[in-house]
Length: 158
Length: 158
DNA sequence: AAATTATAGTTGACGTGTCAATTAGGAGGT
DNA sequence: ACCTCCTAATTGACACGTCAACTATAATTT
Image (cartoon, rainbow over the protein chains, first blue to last red):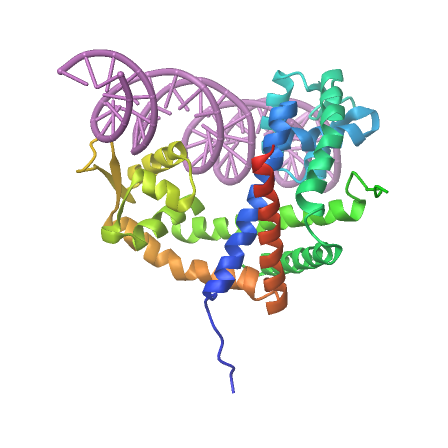
């Protein structure tokens, strides 16, 4: 006996889905707006600056940086170009491998990150951590893990 | 006695925050990829086509459409331009108000939406509804509502 | 009616992201 | 040494989004 199964989400499920996606997007946008207005940094800038700040000598090979923040190389290349124009980073060619390029944090880039970092963390607390109970945060963590696992499972057999 | 309070998120809270944002983004990207590959539609296209499909006479004033899907007028204008080039919609000037423009679904646009609609809903079920328990879905709904409320509260006093 | 103000929509500049093509240098086999 | 293949990074074309400036028409005020 095969069990009968709904194929399409119910109205309520669809509502939650939309809430979920739109809320995540709204939070992302709010954070991005603050970062931009207060420190003239985009979220992309922030990711790059964070990774470089934590790196040995404030410098990383392009491909290593891309892997660290989960970006495609091409995306990073475009972005580094824009950041270089603004003086946040420099590009120097790699000593060991002359194909390579290293991104190096400038003084200006380091300063921008130092200024933005703690306020940014405080924003995350105010917007995400504070409004939720510890149980809710734990539940969100589990939901995210479950959804990711579902995604991965499909990557195998699209 | 004022209570001592952590100002910055803990490592675990930060992890959940990132999981949350990244998972939402990954789901969005997966849905978008399917829509694009199978039906040559972007999520923006889909939103516009959905709104027009549900509208009286398959047509809407530009500003009404923008409000319906929560977009800025300028964004919609650019997007309608691209959709018009591809033959998914037409723009006609508004009879009552000669400043206005109406977006009208073309046959092709209607067909594209019909083709994409149910598969898209099925994707949502497979990626979001199926992996979660009903309790988890309810919890996500509450979390989203809570976070939104927090966002709104700040809009008042930024 | 004329002047002012508000609204509808478009446009251009620019940041951002993806994809496909390209350039250039390393690595391994013969 | 030479050929082939792999990898690093950049580039160009294009879709998408925001912001500010602009055009044109409607609505309101005086």
